Length: 89
Image (tube, rainbow, N blue to C red; front, side, top):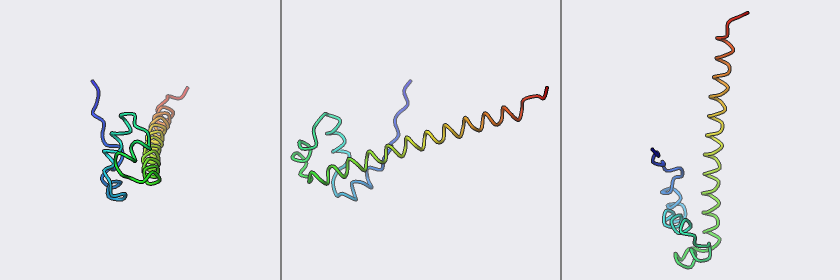
């Protein structure tokens, strides 16, 4: 069974920062619209739109890096535990 995805980025904060509906922009991008089409449809400046897109990409990159660090820390901890609990020969 698939788990429901938790919101990975704070869309409300980005919407407040750029004074536009970021969730609507994401929805349009997922539909396959280009940046120019989204800009004309929503009335958002193209440069602002690209800045929003880069902020979203940066947030996703940070989350992936954080997950990678957590996984590495877990494997390091389990390896260290195995070394300590191994009987001496």
